[in-house]
Image (cartoon, rainbow, N blue to C red; front, side):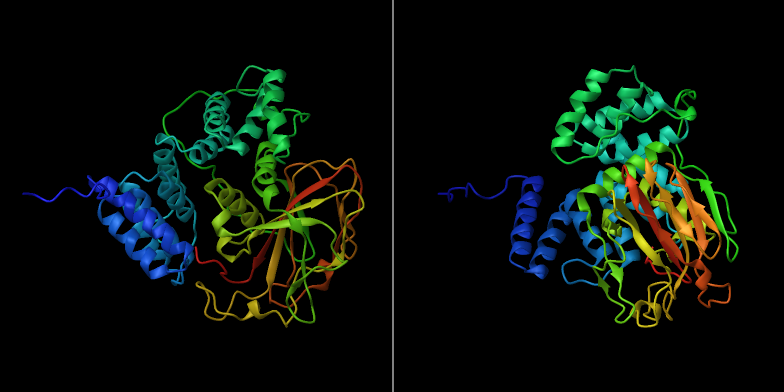
Length: 420
């Protein structure tokens, strides 16, 4: 007589793969990284896209006590995308926006983004909406934001609320905007509904096949002892940055010149956060590429993007952005430079809102003061072209007197710092 079937044994490859994923999760909770990896590998071999994505994600960021391997991670993520993982396509879109890796470019990034969007991933819908909005295709953008909001994406909801309030790509409906705004505010999401629409948000470009990221022109960057001010972001881009970074804000720290370590000092009284690569998405990378290009340098040379918030009375006292000799990162080998990334060659800051009063960036040695305007950037060099520190780069974040100040900062090194 046959033995009774074990009711706990999975009946299908999909069920078996899910069981291995659950074993992997348990192993990770217990700190058994090798067991977790083996369980995910078994699930991936059964055709599970999520398991394949998790393996690629771990390899890309060096998780679970493994060494980061970008090339291998990219191959694993591509297999996950081929199996249907939208999350893998989103990560591959970020990797395609790299100046260090082979076979990259905005068209490849856009293709991965479209595939993830076709799979109705809310983050992909949100990023695609930003891309479409940058091309003036506002009706399509608003529709995608509505879909992402319906799927529970709070950033998409806040962006949609602004569009409903102002009637951008959708019929104006302040009541509907307010209905979105209230629960988001309760979650701590900053929703601004009193902004004016920009000129390029009032029209509508015709629908066309395909999407691509906006072109970023080559730029020599500022000369020594020069601050270049230019419009770099749309207002919606500014809000995007604020929304993505706000949940991670903490009291700002600065580099202690004596030790080269980060510490809380009276020099800077703002709140801030860093967008490390695990927090990036393809649109955030595109915005950073624009900031780096404004300084005449590639994104691979940049430190993580910083978001700063200044309340009334808060400031950043006179300082220079270049690092002291005690900072170990100056000569520490990086994936792109065996001799280290060097010092902060240049800085680009983007003002993300208008400040009611105060908050200017003052350059006393250069006789220049920059007033915060949403979407406008200031770029300058911290070093001479020879690599010697330039003390004329001294600058001050003036105290905010009324209102608040949101600012993004990108410090860009002499040589590659990032892995991709």
